[in-house]
Length: 309
Ligand SMILES: [Zn+2]
Image (cartoon, rainbow, N blue to C red; front, side, top):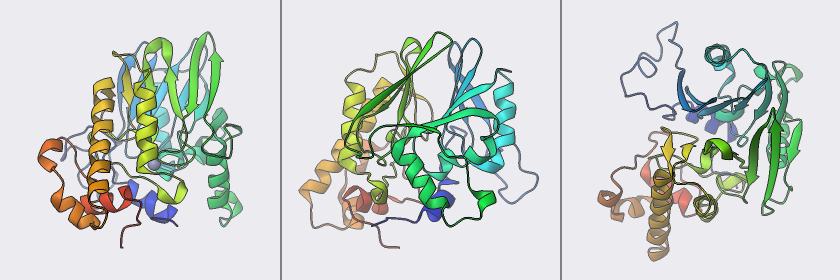
């Protein structure tokens, strides 16, 4: 059962508010005007750790003594601009490209980057899902698959992979299915920075990919797990929205808990009815992803039902 086709999702996610740019700024205006201004912006989070904002999922950049690590890569057409902004902070080669999950707005640049990064790393299920979605493509459009994978194909199995690079330690963790069945959280403990992929949407209603093993309960379980060890002064890169801290992750977890309680108290209500009776005033700091994911569709998905098209 798929809530939305992969292609529809990839297309729809183009318009997700990935960056904290205000509406009307160059990145959002004149969609059909050419040439489009480069949407990339970079924010320094710690010594040698950065977040890059563009038009897909947020990107992480870690620079070590002799190498760089990229976390996610948005869409293929944005790769030249992405590499340009990476070059603005480092000339070091990109040794690892880590994918937080398989969605097109996070791995869309894999094929274009394949020859420029040494190895692509992801959860086992990410490679499997990418292979499946590429099976019907012509051979020139195939590739960019993760070469190092970790984690059990059974999404319930939790696993951790440690990368030691030039004295820096980076942890990749899969805490069971949440947004999908291949989510990887990327933490750099020494810098108190974590990229949470789409387990964390900062101030936004999240998309949950029911067709790829995601669930509201899984999202909450992942967030609880992260909050149990995340240092207070951490900086957290969300899949979408501005960089946040531990309190923003806790606020997002509390929001999802409120959504879950509301659904449990009203099992017969449709997404539209759940939206109409939700205490929006208490959660006025959360915005929907309309037109891709309006509140009623969000409630349908959160309740485990594919929304009506
Ligand atoms: Zn996603």
